[in-house]
Image 1: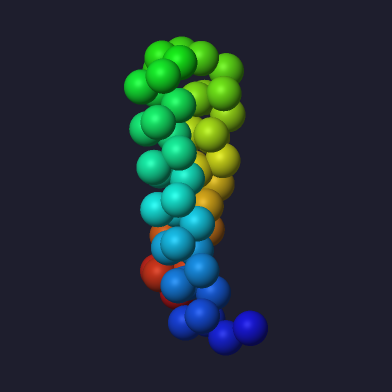
Image 2: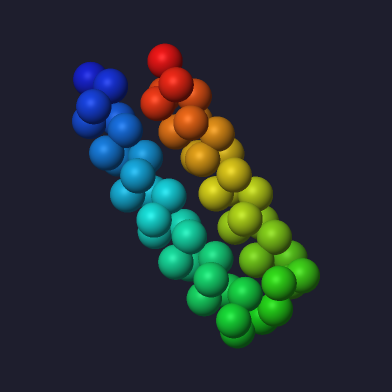
Amino acid sequence: MEKGTFIIELEYKIDTLRIHMIQLAQSNGFNHPDTIKCSQELDVFLNKYQKLKSN
């Protein structure tokens, strides 16, 4: 898979997770385990994205 395609897929995943995390936080609260888990998963993808963009 080429870098540009991978970046686009990461951006989509990040946007999707961000929306999901906001919905979880609104319905369950910021400290709910599901919200925290989603936030941590989002962090992983954001770190991958940042690493790709900086190279």
